[in-house]
Amino acid sequence: MRCEQVKSLLNEYCEGSLSEAMRERVEAHLRGCAACQREARFVQAIWRGLAAMPEVAPPPDLHARITTYVRANTRAREALGRVAFWRWAGAAAVAAGLFIMGFFAAQSDGVQAAFGFGAKSKPSVQAPQPVQAGVFLEYRTTADGARIPVLEARMNREATAELRYAPDAKTEPIVVWSGRLQPAKTVEIPLQTLLHTSGERVLTLRWTLEGQSRVLYVPAGYPPAKLASLRLQAKLGDALRQLASAYQTPIEWVPNGEEPLVVLDVQDATLEDALQKLLIGSNYTLKRHGGFWRVVSR
Amino acid sequence: MSIYDYSSDEVLIERFKEGDEFAFDLLVRRYEQKVYQLAYRLTGNPDDAADVAAEAFLRMYNSLKRFRGDAQLSTWLYRVVSNVFFDFRKREARHKHLSLDVPAEGDDEPYELPIEDERVDIMGHALQEEQKRVLMEAIQQLPEYQRVMVVLFHIEERPYEEIAQIMGLPLGTIKSRLNRARNALRQLLEPYRELFGVEASPTFGVPQEASDAL
Image 1: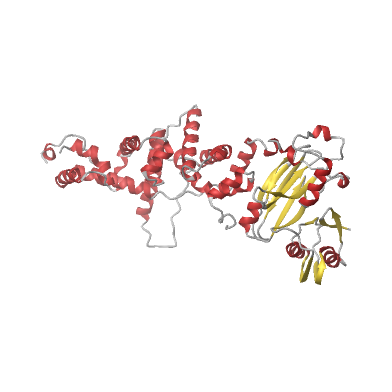
Image 2: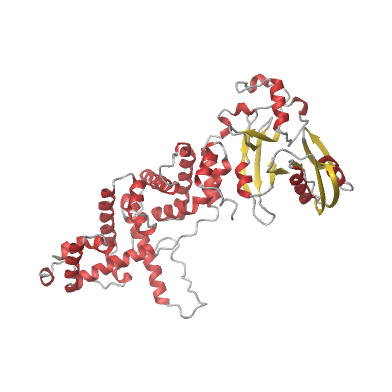
């Protein structure tokens, strides 16, 4: 075998993919040819060098860069016929500024039915109606009967909003959703995966709308419990989280900068009773919207 | 972080198809590292690599609904990254011709030797670093297709069958192209033989009568 021939077979030889007969012929040549031996060592050294290339550290903002780019270049999903999710609750019209309200599907479904809005309704037709703005907790029923929690965000004017989730206080919150809310468009943010993957009974979500934030405690289960017994001593946020878990009911908290230490000891109490007792002596009070409790400044 | 470790790719893809944006975010987190590695090997710089990665995930976002699971998601993503890389190169008006003699940008900073371990083979370590740099630059000089072949097979260590899927080419074509790519790489590295512990061989290439007989 000639050097040129051997040289042309070195890749396959080093890889071990030559037939046995060919391999023997190449080896016979290599035994007597220092130049080809060197060449084989060279090939092997190159391959070893390639295989040993270390992983490079990605830039720290890689994830943010990817998600920002994807968001900037995809049409917002709400543009794709989310009209079907418009639900109006005239009674809960808002006064001014920013609002977060939650409903249970049973109630908002009822409202939808009462108004008779279907998928074909156009926002322009509904324009004279008092427009709601804010974030709504909804449960959608899938084909197999499971209830999936979703957050719906809609505004009566353009606003920048962001939803963050942190599994605990030490972890940097993950942006679950961010974007601009447009008038007459609803954004739906499914929470099922978040609940499923976090493995938590209650998600702590922080909504930021135009720079102001609200905390939303979203329990994984459904339906809500009527009565519960609780004994706790905790900071307000933690206490509300425990209540949301015990009653399987979302609670919204509008922090005013104070997070008092609260104590609670109730037996077979309703959520309203428990919350009222919890807030005694604090600068917070309780407001109700539909089946949903908000803890706000007095 | 463990919050995204539970669901399989298939479950997350299904959720995403149902409109769950967070599922997409989890998929990005799961694969961004891999995607970036490949993009970096192909483009040779962190900035372009991040751009390629972002574009690859955008294409994933737009086409995941049509993903039928014929291939592994990672294989499919590798394919997307390769295509994005080809497109980027096509768009690039200018072709940077890096010289192997000139250190790449940022490489002129003083090299910091690890001092905590005196037994470290300083020369050997410096040589290895130099070898990596030369290898990386040689890869960047390969034509795009050859580059993808070499990176996928030798660095990412993907099997032939998967590379065939990634490139959408028959196995035989992959093998012959990889062979050409390896030879081209060897030629590019010819002036740096000593870095690979192989002494220069000035007579090689000239037919040697003595060995011809064997």
